[in-house]
Length: 185
Image (tube, helix red, strand yellow):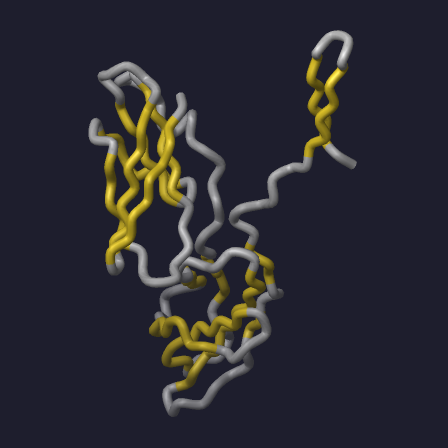
């Protein structure tokens, strides 16, 4: 399975067109940050990405209509993070303010979640995160009068969605014309 990609962007729409070396009929299996999106027989698909938003788009081509897109999926790339926490022991919490910090900058409110007296735990899914950026999150319970409670802070985390390619050393034996690839030290 070999495809080549052509990417065009107009506004918030990024269109990916692929060319397959396979003989038709060809089925294209599309992934966004490692998550399977679906199969098409068309070699073009549009994605809505905001300006500056980073995403990894993969496509696998196959002549097998019954190709298993989940068993053959590319490695997932953590483009978002789910933050989980347990409710505050305070009884007067009105809502939780979820804040995010990128590379040690200013804290930014990314979501507010109403308190539910019947809920034991909460979660928040971030927007897409930038590669090679260190993020930190904190949850601040806010009472019914608007006072901030004690923040719950999470350790900072470096997001690495697209790791560096391994370095290889190549040697050629002039007598046999044998080429050897070995991971560089």
